[in-house]
Length: 357
Image (tube, rainbow, N blue to C red; front, side):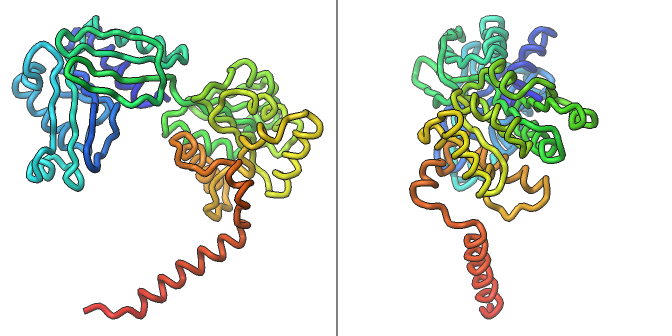
């Protein structure tokens, strides 16, 4: 399954090849609350069909209505790219479904061969991060190496956006947990690889959209060369397999490397990798173990949810690092659960005995 940005670009390119008029819409800037962040993409064709989104739906409805009534030209002020702002007034914010008086500034461009969507897609497929510079006067596009996490820049002359390779998840071990984890990752736009050299585990494992491989874990890691858009999670509970993946993954650029297991097993794993494979503690500070955020998970689906939540948190820069956990001394999970339950129990009692008019 493709991520949303790639899907938007590929669909826009297909519509153009079919001879349809296409408008590519980019969220350039936002103020206040906004349903979609800067850099979000949407494409609309001349029939009013869309892919992607730039708001909660009302801005899309306005653009679709204008295009259906007057064609693609009705959504733009001329042949050149157009900058449009929604939500300037409280009334307009309410009309277009923008929360808390939020404002969204969009750039609309007529898709043409000089838009270079095909070149951009090739770069994404080759896992290259690209900076796309749109000339607001001519519609000409310049592509150059960039960074995936760059913030869009809009000035009077250009719109600069950053697109990169699809996020990727490498899972070691084929089983129920990896199935749930893969399903969640696919729905979040990740490309997913599941590796298990054990034939008895692979025999009944399949999931549409996932690449299942019988390679040894270290061979797969060396072949795929995890980059800054890749997460690696070891799920077999077998050190002979998990360690092979972790040793090489920890030396890569992967933004997340994790392994399941109890806290005791995670400590044992950490010491084993240090003593027998000479991996420094500094490098081992990158290893998330036990993998996942604490949510009291018990079932494979719940454990997968906790792992995927941590992967996304790290990807978005919202998670406490492993080094910080080790340095400050993470609260024991059972103790944390008790404190959390005490807190919510007090809230429930307070609500129960609070009289309301």
